[in-house]
Length: 153
Figure 1 (cartoon, rainbow, N blue to C red):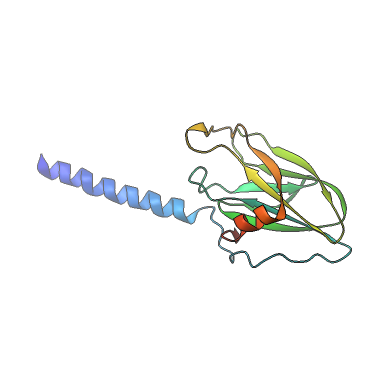
Figure 2: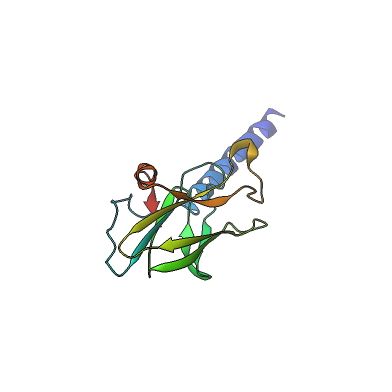
């Protein structure tokens, strides 16, 4: 009986390690750490969109859309810099699965940067449908503090 118990323990450890390796390699931002703000050209606008690190949805990258067109993915603890033409744009984040798409209208001003964070409840409040998720505007000082530890995709 003890041989059988040891075998199950051994295989259980192997399965756990394989799962941890799989999760740690999926959907993570691998680009460089945030280098600082890029000043947009006078005829362009810059949008910084970010997602802080969390254990919730750790290995799940979210699809980012700008004006209905795919712009990339936002992984755990990552950011995107989106150079846009000045004017009104729609930013959307689609977590996937049964989660609804979060959407916000943004005003991109020529020669200026704007900052937005994708937030969702974590811990005991986390729902598979990402209920309560949204894209929220952030002031530059607050965004810079968060961006310092994030990576690009």
